[in-house]
Image (cartoon, rainbow, N blue to C red; front, top):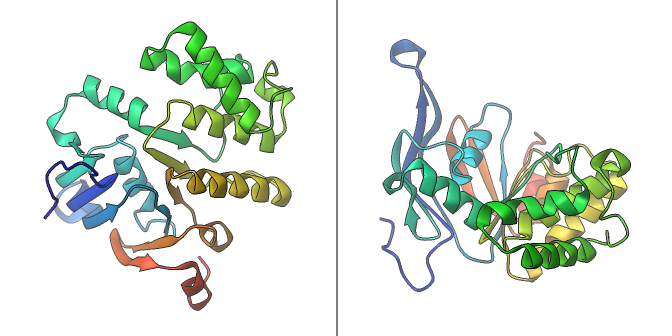
Amino acid sequence: MIPSNSADPAVIAMEQVSRVYGSGEAVVRACDRINLTIRPGEYCAIMGQSGSGKSTLMNIIGCLDRPTSGRYLLDGTDVATINKTRLTRLRNRKIGFVFQRYELLTNLTALENVILPMMYAGLGRSQRRRRAEAALTHMGLANRMDKRPSQLSGGQQQRVAIARAIVNQPVLLLADEPTGALDSQSAQEVLGIFQALHQRGITIVIVTHSHEVASHSQRIIMMSDGKITHAQLSPADLGQLTPL
């Protein structure tokens, strides 16, 4: 059973979570009675072949989709008990997203892209700018703040996306194939950033098919046919698994 709110709740706590599409003979159980707990400060990778359910699980973790059944607590809040408006606010405050294709707004500068989520969070103008500049400087982009995405390399765009993801100081950084569109050098730089964020105590969940990306995490969760088949693998266990 999921414990009630405590002084230090799990960042992610799922009990018998399912996501079902269709009905009758056409029913698809994209997630099938998932039980999962991720504690503050963990660095986890969710792996599985295409169709394993990892993307559906990511959408549920990120509050982009709701379970058909079961219970999901995000940092102690039962997401089923709040309406759509409160869920949007919870997602903005608690989760930072990093996507494979960066998802930056092309008509905004790097600084403006990072400022955007703080506008939704209601922060004042001077605080927004100060935080955004600090986040971009931390990502090594102090001299690129006024550039639009088209003027940045793929690696630089992903660093802007990471700055945007952490600027609201979320409890969870959720990344979907964050190195999938990058060259090998940029990918290593991004993975180094994730490692540094983990060392700062940020909870990180990466969804990936890459053994190389997963090997940088501390805990690997394997999925198949909508179920978690292994919940506590270590990077050392990856060598015994068939590449995805």
